[in-house]
Image 1: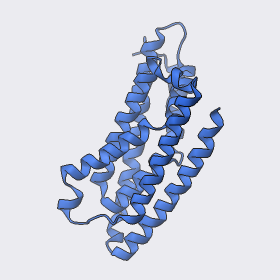
Image 2: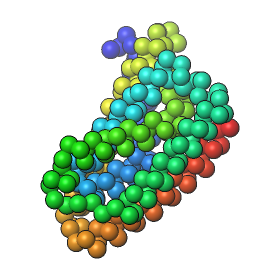
Image 3: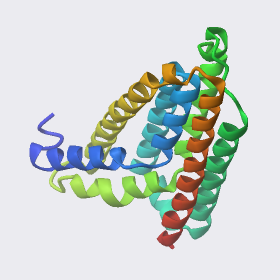
Image 4: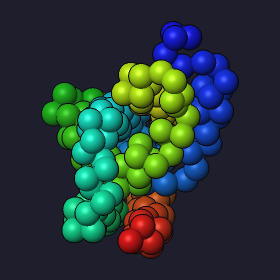
Length: 212
C-alpha cells in the first residue's frame, strides 16, 4: 500500500474527502429526504447507488473521459443541465409523493431498486464529481509513481469515505422517522426537505455554471 501512495499525501486527501462529503449538497439533501420519509433501508439503497456512481465516474476519469468532458463546453453543460433537471424532478417527486409506511411498501426489493437507481443517476449526472476527479484528486498523487494506479486507489478511497459519511447521514436521519409517524408531520417535513432540495438544485446550477 505504501508503494502506491505514501502517507504524506494520503492523510490530507482523507481529510479533504471527509470535508467535501460532509458539506451540504445534493447527496446529503436527498439521503435525508429518503431516510425520513421511506426509512433507512431506502436510504441505504440510495447510498449504494451513490457509491457505484462515484466509482464509475472516478474510473472513467482515470481513463481520460473526465478530461474530455471538462474540455468540452457542450458535454459539460449537457451533463450539468441533466443533473440540475434530475434534482428538480427528485424534489417534485418528494413534494407530491407520500411514502408508504407498511414494510411491504418500504422494504421490498423493487422499492429499494428504485432508490438505488436514483442514487446512481444523481451521481452520474454530477459534473462537480467529474471536476473533483480531474482537477483536485490528481493533486494528491506522487509523480514518481504510477499515476493511473494512484488515481484508481484514491478513487476507491474517496468512494469508501463518501459511503461511510452517507451511511452516518442515513442512520441519523432514520432515527428521527419514528417521531414522524403522524402523516401530517411527515408530509410537512418531506415537503420542507423537498424545498431544500430545490434550493440545492439552484445552488448546484449556479456553482457548476461558473466552470465555463
